[in-house]
Length: 160
Length: 353
Image 1 (tube, rainbow over the protein chains, first blue to last red):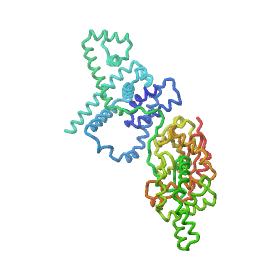
Image 2: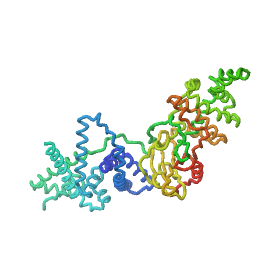
Image 3: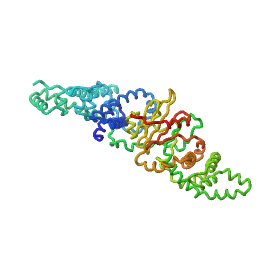
Image 4: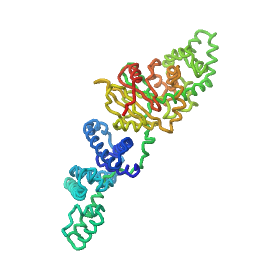
């Protein structure tokens, strides 16, 4: 159970907190809570808890932003960053920006699907009708791709 | 049959339609070129969206063991042994004390080996000229050697007194070459064993805040807290040698915060901690021995001896309060007098669910 869900949970959380270590910490935390509560549907429960924790985390992060800015003032591996690494990072940033343009519901459904949840599980998790998941997903995917391409095109225009 | 909507197409492509529904789609696609075109488009869209999300995937790391040996080395500050002269200063004393006492008493046994010259010369000095006598006294080290040659396990009160008096002299003489030489054959303490004293602001780095429930799961026991004081936050922390480290932050009043450091020893380390800690730290003379161990620790650190001696704690510094509850080690630190902290420590209670 831990083995199969941990990665999916980290993947899900990463797209919310955009920090691999933080995502791993939160995933561990979610599992620790699951150990105590022993929910019936542990997998679905884990994603609900993880989503809540990520939201709380985002709020807290907003409060502590000033503090964080101080801490991260030191350069982040920029010295050793290769062109390739930079390209990977800018791709990631573009996808992050594109995801931000989705509506919260579309984004949630897309991220849950990408983390390996079934339509049934996504429906339970989001409170949407099972029949609406396909429609939501098709819209989310289309907007993601459009936003990504638009962002990329925008960058090229900006660069001249 | 009407055309297939996007949602159904995606559900079909995602393999989320029932077999009967999927057969219906198959049938429609076979006779509707428009929908076949859309089918190809949506399939490409799904692939593309998947690719984009993969660009934003977390780095693929090894699956960490679940809550086991979740430790990370942290900076050791052996030489920053600067205890507060002012009561208000906050000092965290990490609680490998038992282990340290164990290794320290071994060191105690080894000391006389290099000591004889000092010992002898001091004996001869008894009848020597006053000038020589003064010189011998000033270098203090032979007296330490003599004291070490005595009963190693339980120093008599008189001997303890002597050690205490020696301290200022040692401070004054700064680097003591023989002492450093002595330390050479002594095995350096393992990083996870021993006293680590953290000066305020350099304590165990706090990790993410966690819930009481999670804290309980981590420790395998109820986390401890001072009853009556609201718990502000429970942080997770990491420290080598411990499978779980928690910091329970409590507000005593509007501007006083105390931190309870609670640790659960890693399974690997358990033997060392239990075997040496059980009797030793609770020995009646543990205060005096702690002082001694601290003194012995000075020359063993890597930093120059002069710096060590300059910053060493006064010997009459209070013993930082600690308490063992089961396999947890608790330490309270806060901007309060040490005796108040010690009282608080006696108050701590498990936080019941």
